[in-house]
Image 1 (cartoon, helix red, strand yellow):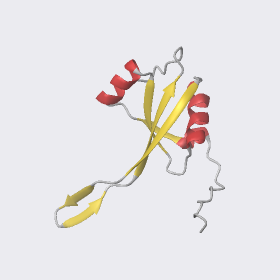
Image 2 (image 1 turned 60 degrees about the vertical axis):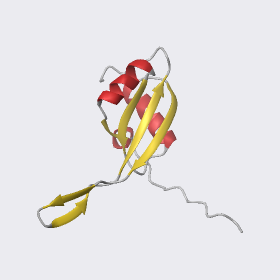
Image 3 (image 1 turned 30 degrees about the horizontal axis):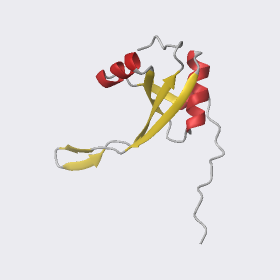
Image 4 (image 1 turned 180 degrees about the vertical axis):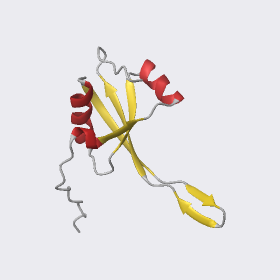
Length: 104
């Protein structure tokens, strides 16, 4: 029985649409100094290759690898109502040894 293969979207995202914001956290700062890896919140439609091209275009660096995570929203409560924060996508981008992003 053939497996279901998801189809790629026909939407082409610009570099500034792929990278939504950098994730500046304590763990991210440690990762940037030790491993030369940086974390970003990215568009949920973006693929690993989209993220690689966007980071290389926006920051003028050489990207070695990209790892992505789909993060689920957390449950939140306001008075008597229950809801969830939005789902989002996180990308951890590892750079070449001689490149750095000075934003962090």
